[in-house]
Image (cartoon, rainbow, N blue to C red; front, side, top):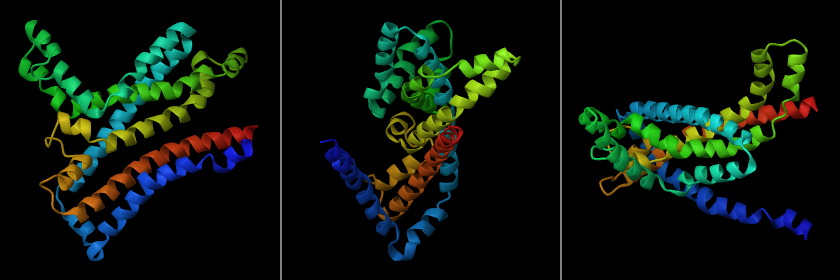
Length: 276
């Protein structure tokens, strides 16, 4: 039975990848390459592309860095909690992952929008409603909405790292005369930094490719690649070859960011294997 599982157990996963990744990708490449690849030339000629690329990269990296930082702090706290408290904390952290990006966006609008209940409370105590009710519809609001469901993803992914962290090297460094910060930097940070950076890159790529939350919050006010792609494939879009080319560009950007994180994690794994 175990031999059968080892031999054929991965086939459902490979079939899933072929059906929902390889086949769509195989259909995009010929579409983008029609007419000698002129779709890419039309895409490069679009004056909005450069700004959209930069905005997407900055938004994704900012959301990834914020989510990685906050998620790391939460993961540390999870590892320090007793079992019973940790269980319900992890349950609460998992709730944002159950909602779609559109639901989260509408939730933020109901809370922080121009007529949101938190906005109304702030207006009641003297804040300017035109200011506190508009920030959610910009890049800052979109970044916070992304962080709402990316922080739990990072925290739950990093929790095992901190729960299984061996503190004996730090204690040994302290015994040998190292300062507390030096011991922490050379042992704990060195150990966990690759995992933190890898998870930050993963959620940054997710933020770069997400369009539902951005569409609900900022609409066409923010020029990013997912919304450019949505405009190409919506009812008003007509150039499907350019849409296919833009899809490949966005996918390449996400793959590069995730590949950077995987390279960091692989380097750490190779270092550990070599040390043993």
